[in-house]
Amino acid sequence: MADIKLKDLRYLVAVADTGHFGKAANRCFVSQPTLSAQLKKLENYLGVPLIERQPKGALLTPAGIEIVARARRIIEASDEVVDIARTHRDPLAGQLRVAFLPTIGPYLLPIVVPKLRKALPRLDLMLYEYQTAPMLEKLRAGELDLGILALPIEIDGLATRSLYDEPFIVAAPSNHPLADRKQIRVEDLAGVTLLLLEDGHCLRDQALDVCNRIDAEEKQDFRATSIETLRQMVAAGAGVTLLPELATRGSHAAPRGLVLRPFVKPQPSRRIGAIWRKSSARQAAIRMVSDVIAEQLA
Image (spheres, rainbow, N blue to C red):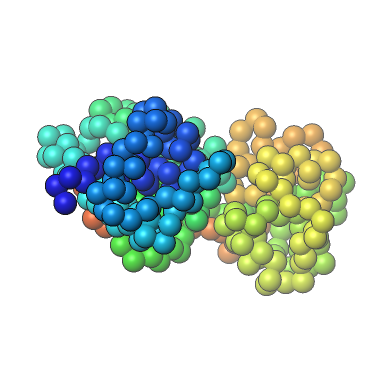
């Protein structure tokens, strides 16, 4: 067992993630021949092939799939050993890898990043953007320390904390009947066809949940890839949509041709929260970052 090097396991996981020796080598900052040779040594030591080498890629063998699953846990544990030592030296210093949903990050970060830098000057925030499924996968794999997403999420080994509730705002073309109202009731959307994001965005599911309360329908021949696409399509008169409140702030929130109207209380909303591994050694930094976000959006 002493002959298995941690870096070789990292190489193997990189090939599993990328499906390609060249991309895996770039990710690990080594040459492709070096990575390939080390993995060949690992296969020789274990006595079983781990990777099926193909002209344009690489696939894991059945043995490789099982070993990669355990290699991820070994790498995570190794990283946590380093994190524990770093945390004991200075729990609020070093890198903290934080991911945001695409429907949260662009609108939340301008509000909280200046406050985070002031409150935690020694913390180096590494910021990423992922949809829910890949974010959770990377959290479990130890590639992220903290995720900011929509709750509820319940997954073994991960802890969550509510940060703030964000109401939805109705975005309608300026010539739409809804534009004449100062506030919108959910029932006012009955019979309205809504523009929504494509599959994979939790904001889509949350908007559909509002639609299911009344007789509103989704526009079947349209799927937006981002909130900005939704915004521009509404401004062009293509339909109505629901936007999270933070996305309606700022000078670009309501382009020409689009109006924003709040719901009457109780407003439909989504709950935004933090998620992290229960075993993480970065608990102090995670708690502080979460505190700052919660205070700013209280």
